[in-house]
Image 1 (cartoon, rainbow, N blue to C red):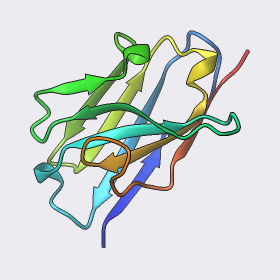
Image 2 (image 1 turned 90 degrees about the vertical axis):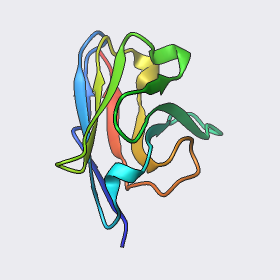
Image 3 (image 1 turned 120 degrees about the horizontal axis):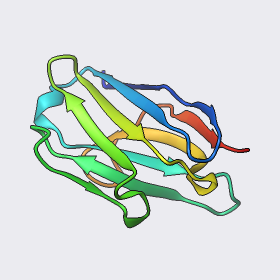
Image 4 (image 1 turned 30 degrees about the horizontal axis):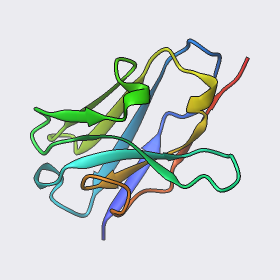
Length: 118
């Protein structure tokens, strides 16, 4: 059974940092590109792709609004993916999910809440 468990969320002030983790099990992690997606609390907001990392961790891609602030990495020995978030903004407030494959449609975990507020 595929399991993705996110952790590391919390409340932080604007300009602060958080590091999210995604522990994967039930599949061969190293064979899959992985993504972070988020859902903001605003009514009608759907899932937003944040970024993806390729199988060997050599390439990663990001939505423009987080480029230079967020970094995705992975450890294929620990079957874990990370999202380092720096210079957080109020508009980054969302539930963050890790997901299999590139994009928003893959199997995802239960999410972790990130709240950026002064």
